[in-house]
Every structure is written in C-alpha cells, then in structure tokens.
Length: 417
Image (cartoon, rainbow, N blue to C red; front, side, top):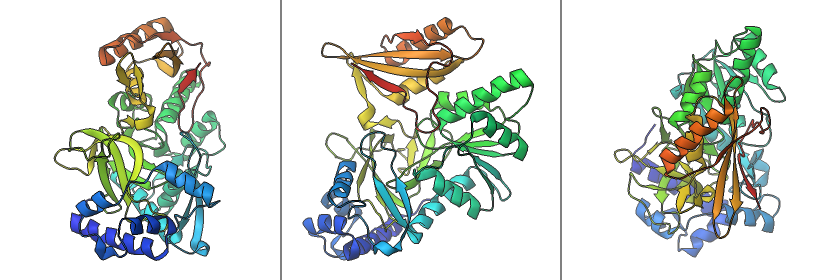
C-alpha cells in the first residue's frame, strides 16, 4: 500500500506532536534544531534537512545512561505492555517497549506481508524458530492469529520434529529465516531419501525474515529446489522499527509507506542518493509513535527503484558495517551468499577472515550435501567467486557436519587473528 506524500506528512506531524508532548529523547533533539511545534516543520525536505539522523549507538547509550529502557518513550510507563530486545549481532542489545497501539501498528504491517503472499483464512502456518525476545516473529504470530490462520509454534523443536509437525498438520505456510529454510529443506530431503516420507508436500509458500537473502535469486532458487511446491516470499524489518517491507515481485521489496518514511543516503556523508543508486536506508516510523525513531540509520544497503522510490530493488543488498575490502575489492556477505547458493550441492558454508600485513584475506569453507563430490563443489564455488568478484577466493572443503547450523540469524563470517 502506497500513500501520497501529503498523507505521509500528516502522519509525520502527528508523530512530532506526540514526541514533543512526552518523549524526552527526541524532544531534546527537536528543540535543539528549533522545532517546538509540529507546524515548525513545513515540508519533507525541511524535516530531512533540519532533523539529524539517529544512530543505534545513540539509542544504546541512552539506555546505558538511563537504564533500563532509556528515554525514547512517548507514553507513561504504565502504558507499555510488550518487551522486545535486539539480537545484538553487531553490538550491545537494546530493549524495546511497546504500548497496545504501537504493537498493533506493527501487527497491521505483518498482516500485509501475509496477505500479499496469498495467505487466506484457514491457512496453517508453522513458525520455525525459537520464541525468544526478538520482536519479528512475535508480531508475525499475533498477526496470523488475527487473520484467522491456524498458528503452529515451532520453538524448542528439532528439525526432524518440526518436519513431522508440518506433515501431521498439513502446514501450508512456513515462516523462518533463509538460512533455516535451506537447512530444514536439506533435512527433509535426507529423510525423504532414507524413509520415503515426503515432509514438504503441503508447503505452498515460505515467508522469509530475520536476515537478508530472500530477494537474492540464487538463494531463492536454492530454497525452491528443496521445497519444490513452495513459492518464496521475502520481507524485512528490525526490532527498532518493526516490519518495514513486503515482497512486490521476486527481488523487490515495497516499503509500507503509510507506516514509514524512507530515505536512502550515502553512508559516509549522509547526503541523499538518487533513485537507482545504492545507499543506506534511513527510516522514520510514522505509526509506531510510542517508541519511535526519526531518521534512523538502519545500516541496510538498498537501491530505490527509479520509477517507484517505495520499492527496493534487490531487497536488502548488504550491511554497511559488514563490508570488507579484499585486495582492493569491496566484498559484502550478501554477495558471497549469492555465489555459494548458486552452486548446487552446498550444504553449508563459512567465511574466515584473516588480517594479513595491512590487508584482509578471505577463505570460504564449504560442506557438501550427502553424495556430492566436495572437491568439485569447492572448485565450482571458487570459479563462481572469480567470475562475480574478479577475485581469487580460496575455497576449502569441510567435513560433513563440521560447520554450525543456524536457526535464526546466521553468523557465517568469523575472524581469525
């Protein structure tokens, strides 16, 4: 759903009114740039030029200074009913609180994810992840219950038990990370070959979240090979902002513009980039006013469509802080993921970074699926890396079962001294 800029601006002015009335964190920032009333902001350009961007470090420091929740709360403390926590994969975990209204705003966004993926009342949905304090899958689960779907939690289960639950309940939709979709599909394939049981027959769609990859063609293909009757749907969001996008065709994510104002900037300068150019996604939450972010630097690299700036072409292309330079070439984890997943027969992989004399070296460890020639697989991955990056990347074989499996956000990149 797209809205015009006038409707967005009205939502922004409401957000500013709420913030100025009760949010100490952002009230201080807005007062610092001369904004003491919503009418002081006269346009989107004015907002973007005057209001500084917010960083994760600022929010984390605020919580350290004013523990445990910081000052980015717009309502009285007694109004907050939901607790979430960031994963902490790139630093200190942050606590995030929501009121009933702000939580429902995110649930509404997740409903759009399900509906645009073709889900209907009576859907049977398996949530194949552990239900910890991470926000995303709680909002997904509650959204699905409100839509009238049969919701099956998969926390605390082995992959084999999750597959049995899928089969026994005739699950039609699977929600998980791209990494786990591959792993669960591989377990299903192995079990099908051993026991002649088809665990994937009922799955019609797989909705991905939690990490990039669902918009990468080779990753989608790898998942759909393992789940031959399923269509893959991508989505992305963050604890700090909630569900942000839904799939608008393969390799395209649409920002829910009634809930977010999206900007794309040069990471080093903060200057806006032109549509069609790669930059960092900056978000302002328009609906989640009880715990908002204004011009928040997400760290996600994206590219807006030239003809429709609410569409992110290629989905999430990488992370600003994950890029490494190897012999003069900028290498992103998403690029390596696309290369490796484009080779049939890879069960799992790991990237090892080593600091050499003034430079970083990169090695890929590859584990092959059962019955595959791992040395041949390694050669294919190495050639694909050279073709894509114009860079020689050492690829070495790992023993079967030696590499870690990931249910939530995969941490495949490791640094060795």
